[in-house]
Structures are given as C-alpha cells and as structure tokens.
Length: 190
Image 1: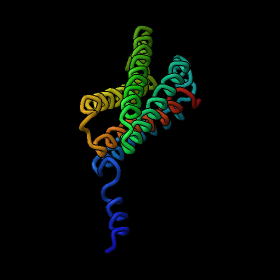
Image 2 (image 1 turned 135 degrees about the horizontal axis):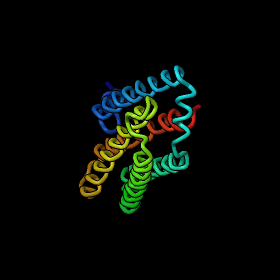
Image 3 (image 1 turned 180 degrees about the vertical axis):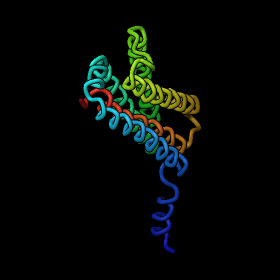
C-alpha cells in the first residue's frame, strides 16, 4: 500500500481529536436532538400555552449568548490553526479570547437563569419551562465542562499535543452546534 492510501485510511480511523471525541459528540448531539424534538412535538400539542411561556424568555440575552459562543468558537478555531503552524502567540491569544467569550456566555446565561428563577419560572412552572431548564441547564453544564477543558489546555499550553487541543476544540464546537439548534427551538420558533 502506498503512503497516500495509508494516510487516507488513517484519516478515517484517526480523525482530528481522535475517534473517541467524535463518538461522544455523536451521542451528545443525538441526546440533545431527542430533547429538542420532544419540545417541538409538545409545542404542537399546546401552541398557545408554549407561546405564552416562550414570550417570558429574554431574546436579547439569547442573541448575545449566540454571539458570545460563535465568537469563542472562532477564536478557538484560530488557536488550533495557530498551533498547527506553530504561531505560539496567536495560539495563546486565540485560546484566551475563546475562554473569555465562553465565560461571557456562562455569566449572561446565569443572569438569565437568575431572572427566570426570581420571577417564579421554575422547573415545575409549566411543560415549556421544564424543557427550558433541562435543555439550557444541560447545555450550560456542557459549556462549563468545555471551559474546564480549555483551562486545562491553557495550563498545559507549552506541552499540549495538537490532538488534545483538537479534541477540546471539537467538544467546544459541539456546544456551539447544540446552541445553534437550541436557540431557535426555545427562543425564536413560534
């Protein structure tokens, strides 16, 4: 077998970040899609009830959270690229900006959670708010775990291998993807 064919075969079995992270991403995306699918189905059963509860959400917060996550993802992609081409300062700044915008997401989401909680929109307020708390809370935990991963990468930035950085970035981009599905399902589609 020539080396070109071997590289193509290796790319299938050893994708960026390793096969394990892709299996995790697959399971997580399927899990979230099942929850979101259930939300959409239940919304069709009681559209006016869901709409009245959906109108209690802060769409501005959700919009800015989308901007924060996408900006964070951009900087992380830039950081991975910089690591590949061995531009250490670009790699470091990309990683730091990614973490900064990720923390911005968590802070703004925490403010939204606090607002909903103090207004009495708790987990048992309605079916809609059960979905809201479970889906956004689960996503919040994923973003927090993603930030912990990025912080570990930052602490080991001098010795981290590219495959480990890629795995962290893939997990982070999974959080982006899930939010891009969750955001319209909870906040926009009426």
